[in-house]
Image (cartoon, rainbow, N blue to C red):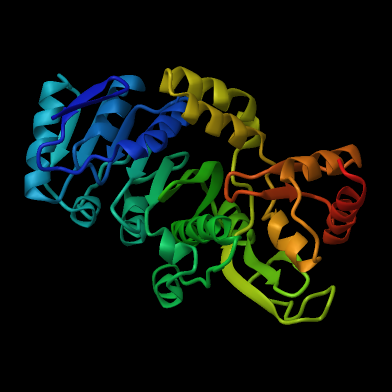
Length: 367
């Protein structure tokens, strides 16, 4: 059966194709269109090859290299490259590790790792074929691990303690980015976040490498810990190599601690005005994708958020609309908006006391 997406038409054959990951591919192309100087790319875990084929055709690359270790899937990949008439595409039936550890490995302007499960086993090796200003895009579908359902697996794979609560999705993507930042620092690279998000069953991050010990150290210093108090609802975070908070600063109760994780930006602020427009040009008529990317571009870029139903339950009050609460906080001079990470939640620079005061006022007096 043929499947068409963007400028590529492929036959799935014996390789896996996930139409629900279209947003991941569209968003990467939308981001890459805004970055100058991308001439070649590596699709490290190709399967059908649709990702690398689209990159080659829609970004006007001089060359794309597609890797697939599974022999049956590689047959589908080879056929799809040929049917899309790509003369500037190379493909190999080889593992990522073997390819990246050749005696004189090729260097790539953009590298994409989109495996089934965790990208962790590939990340150290793909840094060997990167260079200064390389764009690295990676996907994790082991969201249950990153969101805290399997504590020991997260510690083993990412060397971090996850959050198994409403903060899990943002904590998960920050753990994923933090893991990569620590690896990149070993190669003397810092990371600049271009775009990251959590969508359906996967998490996606796109970063740019910055060469130098200062950049590497600067990125590592952006790692730290997140905290959540179950009793009063306080949420906090702090950068640093050690946890310095053991009890809630508001009610002195024991707190949940998660990390280490990335506490820096999750999106390039300079790209916000252009990203939704570029996404609209890439995705065509898919209004759901455009709406998602438009809301993502407007989301405040600060660590974590508050669940309104959880807070109103702690306060023994009926739940209220997060949109009404966000509006009230904005009117009071704060930054406040909904977040794509979790329903019925808001990101805001207001303190929890100010949030609770606004909730109480709305509950008593209405919007």
